[in-house]
Picture 1 (tube, rainbow, N blue to C red):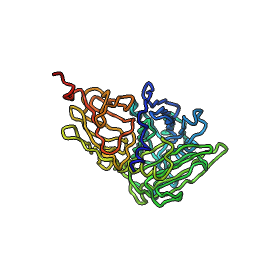
Picture 2 (cartoon, rainbow, N blue to C red):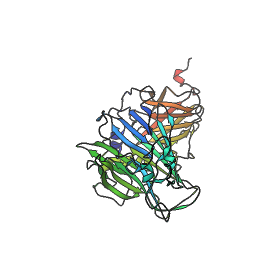
Picture 3 (cartoon, helix red, strand yellow):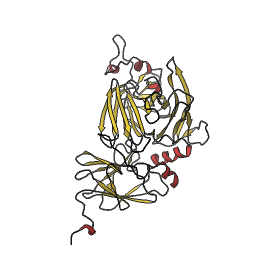
Picture 4 (tube, rainbow, N blue to C red):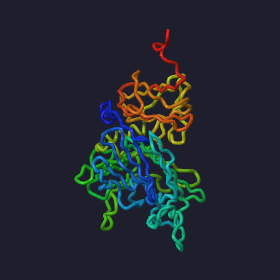
Length: 429
């Protein structure tokens, strides 16, 4: 596993060149948002279009291979049935006999935009596909055309996408039915790429055959037209697989998708006023993670991240964050470790002898002062904007992502505030 971790980590010694607002840029467009990345690793530039109508990602371009944006790697059609990731739900004994999707989004907002990451929030009601088809943008999805009664269900959703420039997305999705309880007949998380035979599905089994359950879904394409790999990892391991590389294409423009799916809530599940929460990791870079063993290593790192220990007197691991589903100190919803710093900062250790940790992110509550210009890793100094990036989310919260390769074995990271005492060798006699 150790060699595999080294392969998947960012290239050591790379010198990022930051954009004006970081590696990520957000641009509002009619009916959605476009996020572009010129990531810290060469060959990691991409673009994603978030669509209110589709309730998620309707376009994904590899800007390194396809700077002209001629090949949309996501499903085609700007509809929830072809969004890169969407949730489909069928309800027992209701007026909604067709599949309900978590779309269209009645609001799409940027909840965070800084030099470390971008966070987008989509909210709306589960609706049949026909509601999204009639959607006209600018909030009209919440108001059906005159004379047509509302066909949206009472089931509400909130989906948060947290994007890092290394090509990793973390998704937190909650669904709730506050006014009435409903019983689930079918529930699927659908991964959809371009409607072409270029994309092939892969799961935990090394052979290209549909497994009964899997720790991940990978749809890969090495050409001849489409090049890209998308890896979907649920925070809950071994979910049943309900679809496997199914392709459909509609119309002259080839609208449709190649889709694979996990079963989410099993049949008979009751959805009510208590939110049902799901979290996922979605990898779109690096796009050479196209083998079962590489995907399995990434799934292991997300579902069972390496544990941190904090030196006594240097803070603590926080296990009570709402995004931390299993209370292990790692937020599956945001893709970062959650810690509380001491007045002098935080000194933590992680053992990577048999684990993978790719461009890890740390969130420190109780931070004192400004974002650090440098940190130390195993006693060696690392510089901000070259080896890592950091930002204050508010007066007392620091967010930090590493960009360089971590050495194997036991790694000690020290992030200090201005209140930390200087080392004895630096004192003046």
